[in-house]
Image (cartoon, rainbow, N blue to C red; front, top):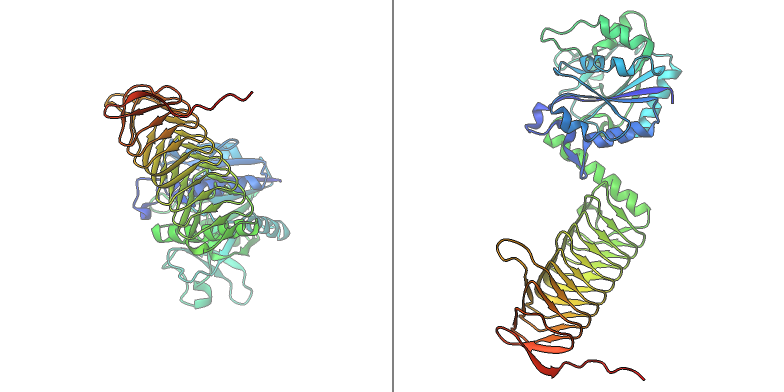
Length: 454
């Protein structure tokens, strides 16, 4: 597309009352700026430039590949910010689209409509306009009586008292003729405080007889986020969009109003999400799963036909057919193998529960590897930390760990072995033996080693 896009993301956002730059405040688990940059990329511009300033390096990290960043050392308004992009942006395309880093809800279709209107009208300057329920804080559009010609945009307090002129405002995006923009910026006189704003270019264009156009937009798209209340509104709308997209893609949300899905989440068809569930970060969920109610899943991978009920997963994985809950916790590095089961009040950290293995209730596994079809009895604990470092526990295939067993790592319980209830296992247990006691001792009786088939 014959279009250069400039994204303005240099401001601090004083009304956010935050140490974080305004454009980096998250919506649906992603910085607002990322949504704007993604929309800009979708237009396939000739060049994409971002203007950064406050905490520039932090902001720059969110731009991704293919974005040229320029610095606005002093935050002296939107027109001043665009001037800083001249060396990167001028002469690259016939038109220049300027977006704001605090407008995460603007859609590509809206920007394309603005661009088409700009070209159809032969305008040197075009902008998104809307009629907010409360126009406080926005630049007001002033039109010529009778003709409706746009004359200027004025700040709050300067607008006409007439309601029809006072309610129309601008925001979200500006589109300029490249040939007109850069000389016009040079003519723009700064305000008493040294600031200059893009809205001031409207009066300059109108006064010199240049055509100015607008495109009516939805308030949610065009309104920037200026404070925490606006952030909450943007969050609610973005989550509504995300939920609707997944429902249309074959996912059942029992109660969308109480289901929270971040922008980076993926979900397979025929999965059901129950109320009170929060899917965060880069979580991936397979087909035909049942998730929730009341579950939090963050940066985790869940296979097909899994069940998560009233549980928390963080940086964990569940292979197909596994299930967990209620009231259990998979911490970073935990993985449930195919068909594995964790019941209520279980916790795994950096541990693998093998295929078909079961940990029914009230147990903790840390830095452990549990073999296929092993059974972890109620109250089992891996004592993996000696105060200085973590140690591994290995439980073999078909092993049976009795209730209230303490596995003092490093330790291995062999294939088919058993531990008695209440055992404190400090030494390795050979395969197909029984160990019990405090400390546990291996007994001579065999725990049922399978006979070889002839």
